[in-house]
Amino acid sequence: AEPRWEWEQDEGDPALGESSGAEDKAGLGDYLGLLTQNKAFLAILLAEIMQQIGGWMNLIATLKIVEDQGGSAIAIAGVHFLRQFPPSVLFPLAGYIADAFDKRTVMMMSSLVSAVTALSFVIVAENRSLPLLYILICIKNSSASFFDPARRSALPLIVEKGKLGLAVTLDGMAWSSMLALGSSIGGIVTSKLGLRDCFILDAFGYVMSMVCLFFLPRLKGSPEERTQAEPGRDDQPRSLRTRVRHALREGMASITEKENREPLAFATLKGSGGLVWAPADVLNVMWSSLAKYQLFGDQPLTLGVYFSFTGLGCLLGPLVFNRMYGNSKKDLLNAIVIGISFLGFGYLAWTFSFNVWMVNLGNFLRACGSSIVWIRSTLLLQLTCQQKYLGRMFAIENAFVTIVSSISVFVAGYVLDLGSVSLKLMCFILSIGSFLLTALWAYLKASRFSSSKGKRREWSYEMVESRELDCDA
Image (cartoon, rainbow, N blue to C red; front, top):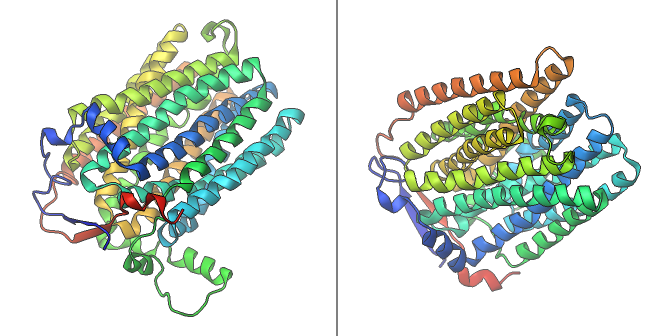
C-alpha cells in the first residue's frame, strides 16, 4: 500500500493553530536534505527552473520589441495583460484537469505546446510584427495556464506534510533566482547577440523541462479523490465534448462548499498584492528608458539589472522570514501582512529615487514583499484546502490574481500615457495603496482568521513513494 499521512485539524494543530516553535523555522540543512532525499520534488523543481530561466529571457526580448515599436505605456501594459489574461479565462478547465488527470502528463503536454510556441517567436524577431507577437504571447501563456495548477497541486502528493513549507519556499526561491539570472542573461543576450537567440534559448528551456518531468512518477490522487474530482462519473464512455462541458459545469462547483470558504478567502491574497505590484513591470520599463536611470546608456542591460534586483529580493525575503516565522496559520498571516507593507516601502523608494541604485533599492524591497506574500499564501492554501479541491483552488487563485493584475496594469499604463500623472506620483499612489492593503489584511487577520476553533475533518493525502521514481516513466 502507498504511504499515507493523516492530518487532523484540531485546535492545537501547529499546521493551522498556534506556532509549534523552532521546529517550523528551517535552516540550510533542511533545504539541502529535501533536495537530496526527495527525487520527485527535485525533478519538478528543475523542470520549473528550466522554464523560468528561458521565460524571463523571453520577457526581456519581448519588451525590447515593444520598446523599438514606440514603447508607449499602454503597449507595454498589453504585453503583461496577454501574459496574465489566459489563466483568468481557462481557470475552470485548468483546475478540473489538474484534479482529474495525471499531473505529470498535464505538465508535459503544457511544456510541449509552450516549446513550439516559444520557437515561433523567432519569426517576430525577424519581422517585428506586434499583432503576431501578441498572438504568440497569448498562446504561450494559455498553455502555461495548465502547468501551474498541476505543478502546485502535485507537491502534497510527493512531499510529506512536515516538509511542505520547505518545498514551497524552495519553489519560490527557484522562481526568484531564475528571475535574477534569466533577466540578467536576457539583457546581455538581447544587447549583445540579438532577440533571436533569446527566443531559441526559451524554447530549449521548455524541452529541458520535459526531460526533467519524464523522470517523475505518475501523479494521480487516490481513486476516491479522482472520482470526487469528476462528480457524476460512471462506466459509460464519454465524448471529448461531453467531458469538457462537464469540466466547465462541475469544475468549480464543490469549492463553494462551507468547508472551503476560508481557503477561498486565502486564494484572494495574491490578488490583493497584485493590485499594487502588477504595474511594477511597466514602471521598470519606463525607468529604464530615462537616461538618468540607465547603466552605460544601455536600456536592455538596465532593464535586466532592474529585474535582477527584483530576483534578489524575491530570493532573500523568504529566506529571512523563514527564520523568523514558522508555518502556523498565525505566523503565515503575520508574514503576509508584513510582506504587503514591504511593497509600500519599495514604492516609496521609487517615489524619492534620484539615480539607478534608488530604483534598484525599490525593486529589492518591493520584491521581498511580493515574494513573501506569494510563498506564504501558497503554503496557506496547501495547508487549509483538501487535496481533491487543490487544483481548482489554485486555478481560482491564478484567475483572481491575473484579473486584478491585468486591470491594475492597464489602468496604470493608461493614466501614465495620458500624462496626467507623473512616474513618481504613480509610485506614491501605489505606496499608499500598499499601506491601505496592509491595514485591511491586518484587520482581517485579527478579526476573522485569528484562530482555528473547534475540531475539523480528518484529511488523508496519498503520497508517491520515492522508489517509484524509476517506474511508469
